[in-house]
Image (cartoon, rainbow, N blue to C red; front, side, top):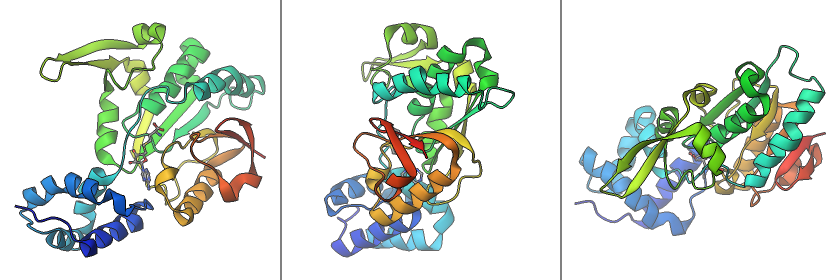
Length: 277
Ligand SMILES: C[S@@+](CC[C@H](N)C(=O)[O-])C[C@H]1O[C@@H](n2cnc3c(N)ncnc32)[C@H](O)[C@@H]1O
């Protein structure tokens, strides 16, 4: 039986999370942290959160993966903030093609920087497939990363719940998804996304506090992740993101986020869409 987390233990967990991901856990997250870690403590035979903190300190590298996977918030769905995908299709792809910035041999480089279970990069891939048609495989290169290994392996399978695809327009649903399974117990359907879309995205584990190994991106999406960072981690993350963005590049953030300190380095062109200046 695992005993409830004490304030002292919660503060230690909070610090470990912050040091490793930049995510600042608010005191209101205490019940959530307890609920998400309880099963792991039971698996390891820890009765107290203090024992688990010792495990984390002793087996830092190995246990940190489980810890981060359990604590991060991964809510996402296809075509979240649909208008931004319209902007990508109607304005950004035509501009990049028109200027011949990338399309003379070099593909358009896109990075979904906190991709969770893949709905965001696959939404980008569907837009690109619609825009570039059959040549999309050679015209775009999509990278997607997250610090959570569990969501990354989910993403690579390309299977999504009915809830995840709720905003996918019917024509795209028919064209890019097929019914994969119907779970009678939980009364929900799962959909498999088309193989060429799965293959078009290169997934990798990456912590946004570090420098991404690729750069010169034409387009970067970093949406609904910065809300979990405090100002200091956010600054580090934005600095790393802007470093990876090409001089003419576009940056997509969520409508509930802002760029604060970096505002003078980008120009807002649509809600949540910025162009580097
Ligand atoms: C709420 S999801 C957003 C998913 C998607 N971008 C969207 O807008 O629908 C936030 C993601 O940020 C990831 N994340 C949190 N801290 C991170 C870090 N330091 N480095 C990389 N990813 C991180 C989480 O694992 C989670 O999958």
